[in-house]
Image (cartoon, one colour):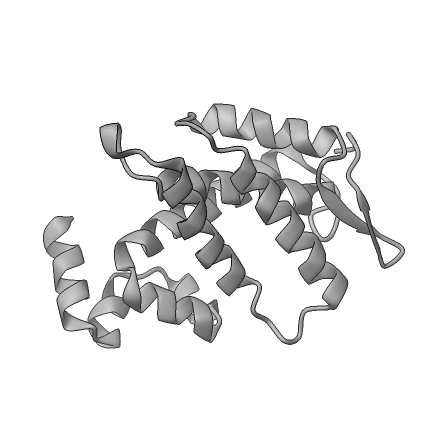
Length: 171
C-alpha cells in the first residue's frame, strides 16, 4: 500500500492516480478531484467512509434518503467516520486533525453550484454535527450509534416543505 501511495504521490499524474481509483472518481466535482490528487491516501479513507455511510443509511432508513432523516444520518455518520479515519493511528491519533481534514473534504463535496441553497445549508450543518461527535477514537459501531442518537434527538437537519427543520426519530 505504501508503495502504491508513493507512486501516486510522486507522479502527480492523473493517469497513475486514476488507475487505482474507483469509478466514482468521475462523479466528483473539481474541488474533490483536486483533493484526490493532492491527498491520495486520504482519498481512499474518504471513499471508504462514504461507502460505509451509504451502506449503513440504506440498511437503517427506508424513507428520507434525500433531504430527510436518512440524508441527515448519512452526512452525519460520513463526517464522523472521516474525522476518525483522518485523525491518525495509535498514539498519533489526533481528533482535531481528523476534524480539520474531514471538513476540507466535506466542504469540497458541497461545492456544487447546482445544489439548492437549503440543501447545502442542511448538508453543511449535518456534516458539522458528525465531526463534532469525534473527541476520541470510536469504533464504527459506536459512531453509528452516536450519529443515530443525534438524528433521533433532533440535533440534525432535514428539509420539509423547502424549509430546513430538525430531524425526528422517523425511519
